[in-house]
Image (cartoon, rainbow, N blue to C red; front, top):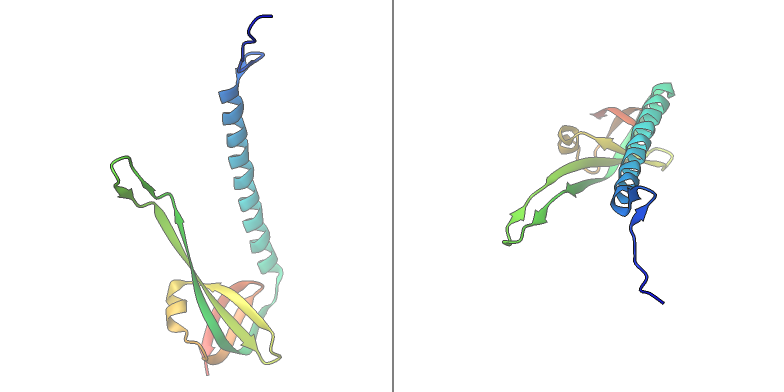
Amino acid sequence: MGVREFSTDYGGIDLFTIAFLAIFLIFIITFIIFVVKGISEWSYNNKQPILDVDCKVVSKRINVSQNGGYTDANGHNHVGSSSTSYYVTFEFENKDRMEIHVSGKIYGSIVENDVGKLKFQGTRFLDFNRN
């Protein structure tokens, strides 16, 4: 019996090419899913009525996402990109609550326990006016 040789060649396509194609397909599929999800949410919001309701601000939160950063072989830190998302939770007179994504400017102008009128369409924030 001879020694069995290991081959990474599958009919002209090597293992590296298969792995590269698999990763590329996963990236493309993920991108398509995000695009479809965004268009779907945009379409949903456009079909909803614009509501103007009394409410109270019950909480605020920030979500910071970092992408990329790494430490090189010399121990130097390289910062990637980051993004910050701002959310405000409103409570309506019937005690239902809704968390809505808002801009940083709006986030900074709203304070917990503010009472006023929230104007929104689906999940889209439009305006908040204090009483």
